[in-house]
Amino acid sequence: NDHDLERFLEPYADTVAVYTMPAGQVQYRGKAAMRGRYGPYFEQNPALHCQLLNRIVQGNVVMDHEHVTGRGPQPVRVVATYVIEGGRIARVYFWR
Image 1 (spheres, rainbow, N blue to C red):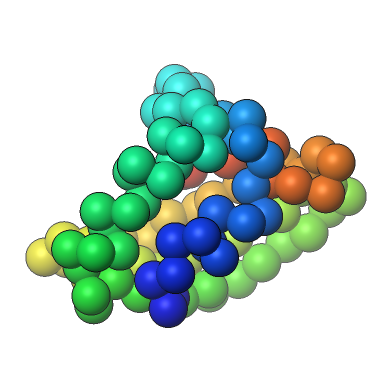
Image 2: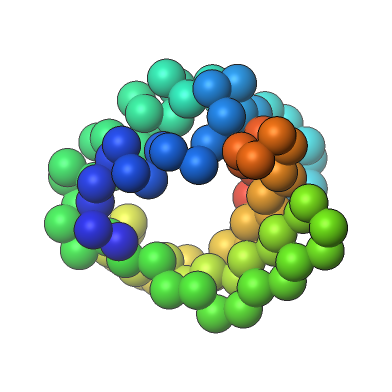
């Protein structure tokens, strides 16, 4: 929430893959693509804020229920599933 892009990207693997669910389509791959996507969000949306509503951890999988404001005219709720491999986030699945 502090809009520090490099700190935000630090836990992700260089080869991270981000999917939209339930279709399972790849939105983008790689930390460089993630940087290109989130950099403008952070710069253009000073009110961007993500509130963690709930978290479930099961082994190497983390599921977060998030309330996101400042991205558009209406807040959105998202479930993000993070798969951890080698100490880094290797895959992300966004459920909307």
